[in-house]
Image (tube, rainbow, N blue to C red; front, side, top):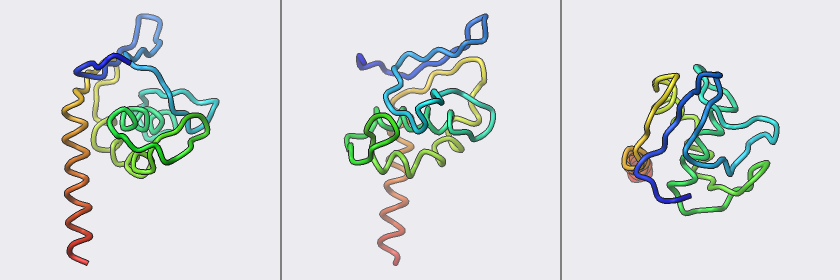
Amino acid sequence: MTESAAFRYYVDRNGCQHFNFPQRIWLDPTIPMAVTPVQTIALETLAINLLTFMTRERDHRAAVGVTSQRAVVLSRAFCADCLLGAPAEAWELPRTSIRAWLNGKNRCARRRRGSG
């Protein structure tokens, strides 16, 4: 994938979803990543693919592909915080927004570890 400033998604006039990045991780080999209005395996797969592009670790084997354990753990929260409220027909998600979200999760995790 060429380094783009943002991840993009849109629905064409036939109702097909299109992304400007390839799906590399599959949680279930029969379910492609997709934008859905509720939490689904397809939406979690989309979240994991986005988070995988933004993390360096590759320490977790999915049904297809290798990602990070961190991406798997954070995927549900990423769906809730960033994907479920997004427009259904099209969106643009800047890499900087995903980095900022991940950095916020890192700070929270460090605070929890330090207070225990």
